[in-house]
Amino acid sequence: MPIQFSDSYLEKCWGYRHEGQEKIRCAILAAGLGRRLEPLTVRYIPKPLFPLGGKVAMVETWVRKMVESGITDISMNLCVLKQTIKDHFGDGGKFGASISYVEEDVPSGTLGGVCKQILGRDARVLPGECPVEIEPFRGSTVIAPSGDIVTNIGADVLQELYDIHKQVGAAFTMALVPVPRDRIKDFGTAVLESPQKRNGQLSSSGQVVQFLEKDPNSPSNLNNASVYFIEARLLRELDALRTNATLSVEEPFYDFGKHVLPAMLGKLPYVKLSSDNRLWGVQFDGEWFDVGQKRDYLRVNERVLDGAIDLNLPFEMLPWGYLGSGVAIDFSKVTIIPPVVIGNQCTIEPGATLGPYAVIGDGWTIERNAKISHSVLWERYPMFRDNGSQLSPDEMRLIDRHEVREGVTIERSIVAGGAIEIDIRDSTVEVLEDGKVAVTSIDAQPTGARA
Image (cartoon, rainbow, N blue to C red; front, top):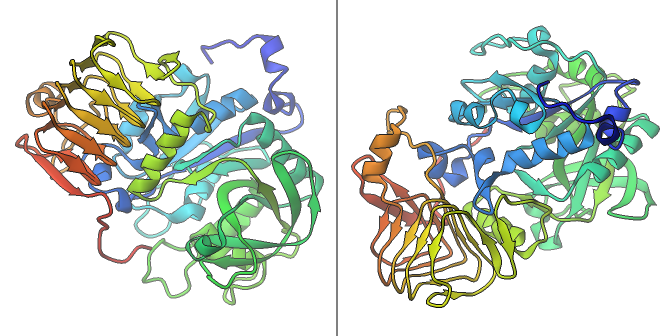
Protein backbone atom coordinates (compact mmCIF):
# COMPACT_ATOMS: atom_id res chain seq x y z
CA MET A 1 0.00 0.00 0.00
CA PRO A 2 1.54 3.39 -1.01
CA ILE A 3 0.52 5.09 2.27
CA GLN A 4 2.84 3.83 5.00
CA PHE A 5 1.32 4.29 8.45
CA SER A 6 3.76 4.43 11.35
CA ASP A 7 3.99 1.51 13.76
CA SER A 8 2.86 3.77 16.61
CA TYR A 9 -0.27 4.72 14.65
CA LEU A 10 -1.07 1.14 13.70
CA GLU A 11 -0.65 -0.12 17.25
CA LYS A 12 -3.60 2.09 18.22
CA CYS A 13 -5.81 0.44 15.60
CA TRP A 14 -7.68 -2.55 16.96
CA GLY A 15 -8.08 -4.20 13.57
CA TYR A 16 -4.35 -4.08 12.95
CA ARG A 17 -3.66 -5.62 16.36
CA HIS A 18 -5.92 -8.53 15.42
CA GLU A 19 -4.14 -9.13 12.10
CA GLY A 20 -1.87 -11.72 13.70
CA GLN A 21 -4.89 -13.67 14.93
CA GLU A 22 -7.21 -13.36 11.95
CA LYS A 23 -7.84 -11.17 8.95
CA ILE A 24 -10.94 -8.98 8.78
CA ARG A 25 -12.61 -7.63 5.66
CA CYS A 26 -15.22 -4.90 5.44
CA ALA A 27 -17.80 -5.71 2.76
CA ILE A 28 -19.88 -2.58 2.10
CA LEU A 29 -23.31 -2.92 0.54
CA ALA A 30 -23.50 -0.18 -2.10
CA ALA A 31 -25.64 -1.65 -4.90
CA GLY A 32 -29.13 -0.52 -3.90
CA LEU A 33 -31.26 1.09 -6.59
CA GLY A 34 -32.15 4.12 -4.44
CA ARG A 35 -35.55 4.38 -6.12
CA ARG A 36 -37.07 6.59 -3.41
CA LEU A 37 -34.33 9.12 -4.10
CA GLU A 38 -35.06 9.37 -7.82
CA PRO A 39 -34.47 11.34 -10.01
CA LEU A 40 -31.15 12.11 -8.27
CA THR A 41 -30.08 8.45 -8.32
CA VAL A 42 -30.88 8.18 -12.02
CA ARG A 43 -29.37 11.38 -13.39
CA TYR A 44 -26.46 12.09 -11.02
CA ILE A 45 -24.95 9.77 -8.41
CA PRO A 46 -25.96 6.60 -6.55
CA LYS A 47 -27.26 6.96 -3.01
CA PRO A 48 -24.00 5.91 -1.27
CA LEU A 49 -22.27 8.93 -2.85
CA PHE A 50 -24.81 11.48 -1.58
CA PRO A 51 -22.70 14.15 0.15
CA LEU A 52 -22.83 15.02 3.83
CA GLY A 53 -22.04 18.61 4.73
CA GLY A 54 -21.60 19.41 1.05
CA LYS A 55 -18.58 17.18 0.52
CA VAL A 56 -18.15 13.77 2.24
CA ALA A 57 -19.97 10.84 0.58
CA MET A 58 -22.08 8.71 2.92
CA VAL A 59 -20.25 5.52 2.00
CA GLU A 60 -16.92 7.28 2.50
CA THR A 61 -17.70 7.53 6.21
CA TRP A 62 -17.49 3.72 6.36
CA VAL A 63 -14.16 3.65 4.55
CA ARG A 64 -12.82 6.20 7.02
CA LYS A 65 -14.08 4.23 10.04
CA MET A 66 -12.45 1.05 8.78
CA VAL A 67 -9.07 2.63 8.13
CA GLU A 68 -9.21 4.27 11.57
CA SER A 69 -9.80 0.76 12.93
CA GLY A 70 -6.80 -0.61 11.05
CA ILE A 71 -9.00 -2.55 8.60
CA THR A 72 -7.77 -1.73 5.12
CA ASP A 73 -9.14 -4.73 3.17
CA ILE A 74 -12.42 -3.28 1.88
CA SER A 75 -14.81 -4.33 -0.85
CA MET A 76 -18.04 -2.93 -2.27
CA ASN A 77 -20.76 -4.29 -4.51
CA LEU A 78 -21.98 -1.82 -7.12
CA CYS A 79 -24.94 -1.58 -9.48
CA VAL A 80 -26.48 1.84 -10.16
CA LEU A 81 -24.09 4.32 -11.83
CA LYS A 82 -21.29 2.05 -10.65
CA GLN A 83 -18.47 3.93 -12.39
CA THR A 84 -19.11 7.03 -10.26
CA ILE A 85 -18.23 5.10 -7.09
CA LYS A 86 -15.15 3.57 -8.73
CA ASP A 87 -14.03 7.02 -9.85
CA HIS A 88 -14.52 8.38 -6.32
CA PHE A 89 -12.49 5.71 -4.53
CA GLY A 90 -10.25 4.19 -7.20
CA ASP A 91 -8.19 1.40 -5.67
CA GLY A 92 -8.59 2.99 -2.24
CA GLY A 93 -4.98 4.18 -2.01
CA LYS A 94 -5.97 7.80 -1.39
CA PHE A 95 -7.89 6.69 1.70
CA GLY A 96 -5.20 4.34 3.00
CA ALA A 97 -7.18 1.25 1.97
CA SER A 98 -7.22 -1.46 -0.67
CA ILE A 99 -10.69 -1.47 -2.25
CA SER A 100 -12.04 -4.14 -4.59
CA TYR A 101 -15.38 -4.12 -6.38
CA VAL A 102 -18.10 -6.58 -7.33
CA GLU A 103 -20.09 -5.12 -10.23
CA GLU A 104 -23.69 -6.20 -10.69
CA ASP A 105 -26.02 -5.46 -13.59
CA VAL A 106 -28.99 -6.45 -11.42
CA PRO A 107 -28.85 -6.26 -7.60
CA SER A 108 -28.47 -9.67 -5.96
CA GLY A 109 -29.89 -8.62 -2.59
CA THR A 110 -28.04 -7.97 0.63
CA LEU A 111 -27.13 -11.65 0.99
CA GLY A 112 -25.83 -11.93 -2.56
CA GLY A 113 -23.94 -8.67 -2.23
CA VAL A 114 -21.98 -9.86 0.80
CA CYS A 115 -21.51 -13.45 -0.42
CA LYS A 116 -20.00 -12.26 -3.70
CA GLN A 117 -17.64 -9.86 -1.93
CA ILE A 118 -16.40 -12.52 0.48
CA LEU A 119 -16.48 -15.73 -1.56
CA GLY A 120 -15.26 -13.99 -4.71
CA ARG A 121 -14.62 -16.47 -7.53
CA ASP A 122 -15.97 -19.25 -5.30
CA ALA A 123 -19.43 -17.64 -5.06
CA ARG A 124 -22.36 -19.23 -6.86
CA VAL A 125 -23.27 -17.74 -10.20
CA LEU A 126 -27.05 -17.70 -10.57
CA PRO A 127 -28.93 -17.26 -13.87
CA GLY A 128 -28.47 -13.71 -15.15
CA GLU A 129 -25.44 -13.03 -12.92
CA CYS A 130 -21.88 -12.35 -14.03
CA PRO A 131 -18.97 -14.33 -12.55
CA VAL A 132 -17.15 -12.56 -9.73
CA GLU A 133 -13.53 -11.71 -10.45
CA ILE A 134 -12.17 -10.78 -7.01
CA GLU A 135 -10.12 -13.13 -4.83
CA PRO A 136 -11.97 -15.03 -2.10
CA PHE A 137 -11.49 -13.72 1.44
CA ARG A 138 -9.33 -16.13 3.43
CA GLY A 139 -10.11 -14.79 6.90
CA SER A 140 -12.98 -15.69 9.19
CA THR A 141 -14.87 -12.52 10.20
CA VAL A 142 -16.59 -9.99 7.96
CA ILE A 143 -17.95 -6.55 8.84
CA ALA A 144 -20.86 -5.75 6.51
CA PRO A 145 -22.45 -2.28 6.79
CA SER A 146 -24.96 -0.73 4.40
CA GLY A 147 -23.36 2.14 2.52
CA ASP A 148 -26.40 4.39 3.00
CA ILE A 149 -26.37 4.20 6.81
CA VAL A 150 -25.01 7.25 8.64
CA THR A 151 -24.10 6.64 12.26
CA ASN A 152 -21.70 7.41 15.08
CA ILE A 153 -20.65 3.78 15.26
CA GLY A 154 -16.95 4.59 15.10
CA ALA A 155 -13.72 2.64 15.50
CA ASP A 156 -14.11 2.20 19.26
CA VAL A 157 -17.67 0.88 18.99
CA LEU A 158 -16.70 -1.39 16.09
CA GLN A 159 -14.02 -2.92 18.31
CA GLU A 160 -16.56 -3.52 21.09
CA LEU A 161 -18.97 -5.13 18.64
CA TYR A 162 -16.21 -7.36 17.30
CA ASP A 163 -15.14 -8.40 20.80
CA ILE A 164 -18.73 -9.27 21.78
CA HIS A 165 -19.21 -11.19 18.53
CA LYS A 166 -16.13 -13.29 19.27
CA GLN A 167 -16.69 -13.73 23.01
CA VAL A 168 -20.20 -15.17 22.61
CA GLY A 169 -19.24 -17.33 19.64
CA ALA A 170 -21.83 -15.81 17.32
CA ALA A 171 -22.03 -16.62 13.63
CA PHE A 172 -23.96 -13.40 12.98
CA THR A 173 -24.03 -10.30 15.18
CA MET A 174 -26.21 -7.32 14.36
CA ALA A 175 -26.17 -3.81 15.77
CA LEU A 176 -29.60 -2.66 16.97
CA VAL A 177 -30.86 0.86 17.52
CA PRO A 178 -34.02 1.86 19.42
CA VAL A 179 -36.69 3.61 17.36
CA PRO A 180 -39.92 5.33 18.48
CA ARG A 181 -42.77 2.89 19.06
CA ASP A 182 -44.86 4.51 16.34
CA ARG A 183 -42.08 3.76 13.81
CA ILE A 184 -41.58 0.03 14.42
CA LYS A 185 -43.90 -0.66 11.49
CA ASP A 186 -41.19 0.79 9.23
CA PHE A 187 -38.30 -1.34 10.48
CA GLY A 188 -37.17 -4.88 11.18
CA THR A 189 -37.05 -5.34 14.96
CA ALA A 190 -35.31 -7.91 17.15
CA VAL A 191 -36.23 -9.42 20.51
CA LEU A 192 -33.28 -10.33 22.78
CA GLU A 193 -33.35 -13.13 25.33
CA SER A 194 -32.29 -11.99 28.83
CA PRO A 195 -30.17 -9.10 27.51
CA GLN A 196 -27.15 -8.20 29.59
CA LYS A 197 -26.85 -4.54 30.51
CA ARG A 198 -23.62 -2.78 29.59
CA ASN A 199 -22.01 0.60 30.11
CA GLY A 200 -21.44 3.06 27.30
CA GLN A 201 -23.08 3.43 23.90
CA LEU A 202 -23.50 -0.34 23.60
CA SER A 203 -26.07 -0.59 26.38
CA SER A 204 -27.25 -4.21 26.15
CA SER A 205 -26.36 -7.48 24.47
CA GLY A 206 -28.19 -10.76 24.03
CA GLN A 207 -29.16 -13.65 21.81
CA VAL A 208 -31.77 -12.80 19.20
CA VAL A 209 -34.79 -15.06 19.69
CA GLN A 210 -37.27 -13.27 17.46
CA PHE A 211 -37.01 -11.01 14.40
CA LEU A 212 -40.04 -9.28 12.90
CA GLU A 213 -39.85 -7.43 9.60
CA LYS A 214 -41.94 -4.22 9.66
CA ASP A 215 -44.47 -5.59 12.14
CA PRO A 216 -46.47 -2.84 13.95
CA ASN A 217 -47.23 -5.33 16.74
CA SER A 218 -43.60 -6.18 17.49
CA PRO A 219 -42.89 -6.31 21.26
CA SER A 220 -39.49 -4.71 20.61
CA ASN A 221 -38.42 -1.32 19.31
CA LEU A 222 -34.83 -2.46 18.64
CA ASN A 223 -34.33 -1.88 14.93
CA ASN A 224 -31.90 -3.71 12.68
CA ALA A 225 -29.17 -1.08 12.17
CA SER A 226 -27.79 -2.82 9.03
CA VAL A 227 -24.30 -3.17 10.54
CA TYR A 228 -23.35 -6.84 10.67
CA PHE A 229 -20.48 -9.02 11.90
CA ILE A 230 -20.65 -12.35 10.05
CA GLU A 231 -18.49 -15.46 10.02
CA ALA A 232 -17.35 -16.48 6.55
CA ARG A 233 -18.28 -20.12 7.21
CA LEU A 234 -21.92 -19.04 7.59
CA LEU A 235 -21.78 -17.11 4.33
CA ARG A 236 -20.59 -20.23 2.52
CA GLU A 237 -23.60 -22.11 3.88
CA LEU A 238 -25.98 -19.30 2.95
CA ASP A 239 -24.56 -18.87 -0.55
CA ALA A 240 -25.39 -22.48 -1.38
CA LEU A 241 -29.06 -21.65 -0.72
CA ARG A 242 -29.15 -18.20 -2.30
CA THR A 243 -31.72 -17.33 -4.99
CA ASN A 244 -32.06 -14.48 -7.45
CA ALA A 245 -33.35 -11.26 -5.90
CA THR A 246 -36.71 -11.12 -7.59
CA LEU A 247 -40.33 -11.23 -6.48
CA SER A 248 -41.03 -14.01 -8.98
CA VAL A 249 -38.99 -16.60 -7.03
CA GLU A 250 -41.34 -19.03 -5.30
CA GLU A 251 -39.06 -19.61 -2.27
CA PRO A 252 -36.81 -16.53 -2.16
CA PHE A 253 -33.58 -16.40 -0.20
CA TYR A 254 -31.57 -13.27 -0.94
CA ASP A 255 -32.12 -10.72 1.84
CA PHE A 256 -30.72 -10.66 5.38
CA GLY A 257 -33.79 -9.14 7.02
CA LYS A 258 -36.48 -10.93 5.02
CA HIS A 259 -34.88 -14.36 4.72
CA VAL A 260 -31.56 -15.00 6.50
CA LEU A 261 -32.48 -13.82 9.99
CA PRO A 262 -35.81 -15.71 10.02
CA ALA A 263 -33.99 -18.80 8.72
CA MET A 264 -31.40 -18.58 11.51
CA LEU A 265 -34.31 -18.57 13.98
CA GLY A 266 -35.99 -21.54 12.31
CA LYS A 267 -38.86 -19.38 11.04
CA LEU A 268 -38.38 -19.79 7.29
CA PRO A 269 -40.10 -23.10 6.51
CA TYR A 270 -38.32 -23.88 3.25
CA VAL A 271 -34.76 -23.29 4.55
CA LYS A 272 -32.98 -25.34 7.21
CA LEU A 273 -29.57 -24.17 8.45
CA SER A 274 -27.06 -25.98 10.64
CA SER A 275 -27.73 -25.61 14.36
CA ASP A 276 -24.42 -24.01 15.40
CA ASN A 277 -25.18 -20.56 13.97
CA ARG A 278 -25.81 -18.27 16.94
CA LEU A 279 -27.57 -14.97 16.16
CA TRP A 280 -26.63 -12.12 18.50
CA GLY A 281 -27.83 -8.54 18.92
CA VAL A 282 -26.20 -5.52 20.55
CA GLN A 283 -28.07 -2.29 21.30
CA PHE A 284 -26.37 0.94 20.19
CA ASP A 285 -27.68 4.17 21.73
CA GLY A 286 -25.91 6.72 19.51
CA GLU A 287 -26.84 8.60 16.33
CA TRP A 288 -28.12 6.45 13.45
CA PHE A 289 -29.86 7.32 10.19
CA ASP A 290 -31.21 5.18 7.38
CA VAL A 291 -31.20 7.61 4.46
CA GLY A 292 -34.08 6.00 2.61
CA GLN A 293 -36.00 9.09 1.54
CA LYS A 294 -35.17 12.65 0.57
CA ARG A 295 -36.34 14.19 3.83
CA ASP A 296 -34.10 11.70 5.67
CA TYR A 297 -31.21 13.09 3.64
CA LEU A 298 -32.03 16.67 4.63
CA ARG A 299 -32.37 15.63 8.26
CA VAL A 300 -29.03 13.84 8.44
CA ASN A 301 -27.33 16.90 6.94
CA GLU A 302 -28.88 19.01 9.68
CA ARG A 303 -27.43 16.63 12.27
CA VAL A 304 -24.02 16.95 10.61
CA LEU A 305 -24.23 20.73 10.91
CA ASP A 306 -25.36 20.40 14.53
CA GLY A 307 -22.17 18.47 15.25
CA ALA A 308 -24.13 15.38 16.28
CA ILE A 309 -22.49 13.21 13.58
CA ASP A 310 -18.77 12.57 14.00
CA LEU A 311 -17.49 13.85 10.66
CA ASN A 312 -14.53 15.98 9.67
CA LEU A 313 -15.46 18.26 6.77
CA PRO A 314 -12.62 19.56 4.56
CA PHE A 315 -13.52 23.22 5.16
CA GLU A 316 -12.49 25.91 7.62
CA MET A 317 -14.57 25.56 10.78
CA LEU A 318 -15.95 28.86 12.07
CA PRO A 319 -18.41 29.78 14.87
CA TRP A 320 -21.29 29.86 12.38
CA GLY A 321 -20.39 26.76 10.36
CA TYR A 322 -17.91 25.91 7.59
CA LEU A 323 -16.23 27.98 4.87
CA GLY A 324 -14.52 26.62 1.77
CA SER A 325 -11.62 28.14 -0.15
CA GLY A 326 -11.86 30.75 -2.89
CA VAL A 327 -15.22 32.11 -1.70
CA ALA A 328 -16.21 35.62 -2.81
CA ILE A 329 -18.25 37.09 0.05
CA ASP A 330 -18.51 40.31 2.04
CA PHE A 331 -19.66 39.19 5.46
CA SER A 332 -20.75 42.71 6.34
CA LYS A 333 -23.34 42.61 3.57
CA VAL A 334 -24.85 39.13 3.88
CA THR A 335 -26.91 37.49 6.62
CA ILE A 336 -25.83 34.12 7.97
CA ILE A 337 -28.09 32.25 10.38
CA PRO A 338 -26.06 29.32 11.78
CA PRO A 339 -25.37 26.61 11.02
CA VAL A 340 -24.30 26.98 7.39
CA VAL A 341 -21.81 25.38 4.99
CA ILE A 342 -20.38 27.41 2.09
CA GLY A 343 -18.31 25.24 -0.23
CA ASN A 344 -15.29 26.07 -2.36
CA GLN A 345 -15.31 28.67 -5.15
CA CYS A 346 -18.76 30.07 -4.30
CA THR A 347 -19.93 33.65 -4.81
CA ILE A 348 -22.35 35.06 -2.26
CA GLU A 349 -23.69 38.46 -3.32
CA PRO A 350 -24.73 41.28 -0.95
CA GLY A 351 -28.19 40.95 0.58
CA ALA A 352 -28.24 37.14 0.46
CA THR A 353 -29.47 35.26 3.53
CA LEU A 354 -28.09 31.79 4.25
CA GLY A 355 -29.45 29.53 6.96
CA PRO A 356 -30.34 28.04 9.16
CA TYR A 357 -29.20 24.68 7.84
CA ALA A 358 -28.08 25.80 4.40
CA VAL A 359 -25.50 23.56 2.73
CA ILE A 360 -24.05 25.28 -0.34
CA GLY A 361 -21.84 22.92 -2.34
CA ASP A 362 -18.86 24.00 -4.44
CA GLY A 363 -19.24 26.42 -7.31
CA TRP A 364 -22.57 28.12 -6.59
CA THR A 365 -23.40 31.77 -7.19
CA ILE A 366 -26.04 33.05 -4.77
CA GLU A 367 -27.33 36.37 -6.11
CA ARG A 368 -28.61 39.42 -4.24
CA ASN A 369 -31.45 38.97 -1.75
CA ALA A 370 -31.69 35.22 -2.33
CA LYS A 371 -32.64 33.19 0.76
CA ILE A 372 -31.67 29.56 1.39
CA SER A 373 -32.57 27.50 4.46
CA HIS A 374 -33.00 23.84 5.46
CA SER A 375 -31.69 22.83 2.03
CA VAL A 376 -28.75 21.14 0.35
CA LEU A 377 -27.32 22.48 -2.91
CA TRP A 378 -24.91 20.03 -4.56
CA GLU A 379 -21.62 20.74 -6.21
CA ARG A 380 -21.43 19.66 -9.86
CA TYR A 381 -21.58 15.87 -9.91
CA PRO A 382 -21.45 13.64 -12.99
CA MET A 383 -24.63 14.00 -15.01
CA PHE A 384 -26.24 11.33 -17.18
CA ARG A 385 -28.63 11.52 -20.12
CA ASP A 386 -31.87 9.57 -20.34
CA ASN A 387 -30.03 6.92 -22.41
CA GLY A 388 -27.44 6.45 -19.66
CA SER A 389 -24.52 8.20 -21.35
CA GLN A 390 -22.56 10.76 -19.35
CA LEU A 391 -22.30 14.42 -20.26
CA SER A 392 -18.80 15.83 -20.69
CA PRO A 393 -17.58 18.55 -18.30
CA ASP A 394 -17.88 21.14 -21.08
CA GLU A 395 -21.48 20.11 -21.79
CA MET A 396 -22.31 20.32 -18.10
CA ARG A 397 -20.94 23.84 -17.78
CA LEU A 398 -23.12 24.94 -20.69
CA ILE A 399 -26.41 23.62 -19.30
CA ASP A 400 -25.81 23.81 -15.53
CA ARG A 401 -25.16 27.38 -14.41
CA HIS A 402 -25.20 26.62 -10.66
CA GLU A 403 -26.89 29.93 -9.87
CA VAL A 404 -29.63 31.01 -7.49
CA ARG A 405 -31.03 34.14 -9.07
CA GLU A 406 -31.83 37.45 -7.38
CA GLY A 407 -34.57 37.34 -4.74
CA VAL A 408 -35.22 33.59 -5.02
CA THR A 409 -36.11 31.62 -1.86
CA ILE A 410 -35.15 27.95 -1.41
CA GLU A 411 -36.51 26.03 1.58
CA ARG A 412 -36.47 22.33 2.54
CA SER A 413 -35.16 21.23 -0.84
CA ILE A 414 -32.38 19.30 -2.56
CA VAL A 415 -30.97 21.15 -5.57
CA ALA A 416 -28.63 19.27 -7.90
CA GLY A 417 -27.89 22.28 -10.10
CA GLY A 418 -29.28 24.69 -12.65
CA ALA A 419 -30.21 28.35 -12.83
CA ILE A 420 -32.89 28.68 -10.15
CA GLU A 421 -35.22 31.51 -11.13
CA ILE A 422 -38.35 30.69 -9.08
CA ASP A 423 -38.95 30.04 -5.39
CA ILE A 424 -38.40 26.41 -4.43
CA ARG A 425 -40.00 24.78 -1.39
CA ASP A 426 -40.18 21.10 -0.38
CA SER A 427 -38.80 20.03 -3.75
CA THR A 428 -36.11 18.17 -5.64
CA VAL A 429 -34.45 20.08 -8.47
CA GLU A 430 -32.59 18.47 -11.38
CA VAL A 431 -31.20 19.78 -14.66
CA LEU A 432 -32.46 18.23 -17.89
CA GLU A 433 -30.40 17.58 -21.01
CA ASP A 434 -31.60 20.80 -22.63
CA GLY A 435 -30.61 22.87 -19.60
CA LYS A 436 -34.13 23.33 -18.31
CA VAL A 437 -34.76 22.84 -14.61
CA ALA A 438 -37.22 20.15 -13.46
CA VAL A 439 -38.85 20.59 -10.06
CA THR A 440 -40.67 17.72 -8.32
CA SER A 441 -42.11 17.32 -4.85
CA ILE A 442 -39.55 16.12 -2.33
CA ASP A 443 -42.13 13.56 -1.20
CA ALA A 444 -42.74 12.11 -4.68
CA GLN A 445 -42.28 8.33 -4.77
CA PRO A 446 -41.80 6.00 -7.75
CA THR A 447 -44.51 3.45 -8.43
CA GLY A 448 -44.03 -0.27 -8.90
CA ALA A 449 -43.02 -3.22 -6.76
CA ARG A 450 -39.69 -3.40 -4.96
CA ALA A 451 -37.92 -6.73 -4.45
